[in-house]
Length: 102
Image (cartoon, rainbow, N blue to C red):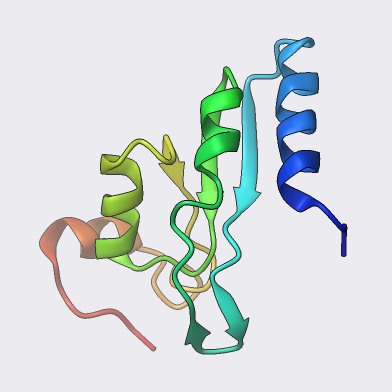
C-alpha cells in the first residue's frame, strides 16, 4: 500500500496527460471486505479533475450508485464486473430497471 495514494494518483494523472492517454480506469476504494461497502464517492474526484481523457471508475457500483457517479461528473463511464458476470444483459436490465441475477 502506498503511503500517500492521493498524491500518487494525482501525479500519475498529470503524467499520463503528457502522453495524450485516451482513458484512465481506476477503482474506487469502496469495500472493506467482500460484500461490505463503505462510501468514498469523493476519493477519485481530484484525479478526475486532473486527468484530461475519459475517466472510467469501478468499485462495486449498482445501478443507482453508477448513475450518481456519472451524474455528478466523478466518472465518464462506470465499469461493472461482479454484476455483469451473472447478468450479461446488464445494460438492458438497468434500462428496464428489472431484478438482477445473483
